[in-house]
Length: 386
Image (cartoon, rainbow, N blue to C red; front, side, top):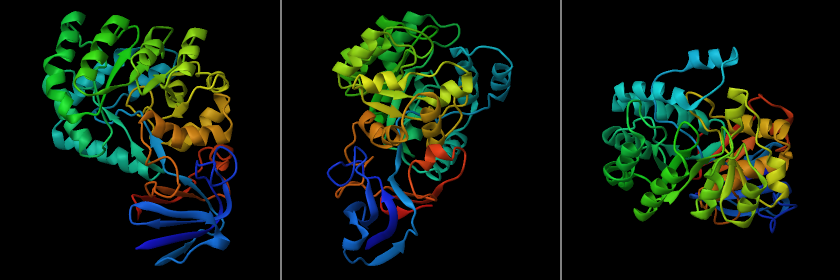
């Protein structure tokens, strides 16, 4: 069955060959979805016939959001930590261990139900691709089951046994576990390997050993880098050909130069700075240097408990000096680049049929009207789900 969505005030395709500017905007547009893919895009006046027709009524259309950084396999609640932080206590990585204890105690069914709830919550806000990490198990069995559960809900699964060193564990012994028995059990369930390269977590040498071990097992590196302060994470990510360096809050000129000269995407996570009252990354500096930038939610129970990509777009525009066009591109095509996907993040013919209609005449309203529920309809794999 083919579906013609017509009457679009404008359609963001992210393909400059189809429309105006880097977003490939088509004015007074229409789009045809056939099966799981986009079959045609262009002016509504030239639209072909289709089996079904929907009039968008002057709404804008964008590709589904691609959230390339999320921690969804967890149990428990860290409201008290958030409340304390908003009362003046600084954020450190230590709160992760609170979630680890609750996650280990939860059943598989409880963890899976929570992931399903969050994935559905994200979908209702226009997110059609979401990455999911482990990292709240930190034992061989708990990391493996976290990845198995994540894989029930998304194809983008990341092994993050190197989230923090468990309390009372020798760091070097834990790195040996992460690169040995834990990796052996977890690699079959994952596409990516990640490490929290940060003070209070893993240093540069430890991170290198973990990422290289993962790469030998066929997992592509990603890196939590330079969130809490300067460090080796960003340059290590570029050196090892990581798909993304995530956070990128504290960068020096050498970090920016490395990102600009490599193929590693800088994934910015404004929800984390919003929720920790930390300094925001300077997206303008990265963009002006020619770095590919993605936006993601960093959904997790401690430092960024949001699944809302529209919220992240609005914050990125207000606090990180991105234009609305840049933020929307980063939240769609940027996320696809960070996941090395060519089938999502855009709406050219042949792309996966992930289409979002906004209850607004322009994508700019995502930043112009922050906090307003603008998602009117969502097609995922060609099926209307919202």
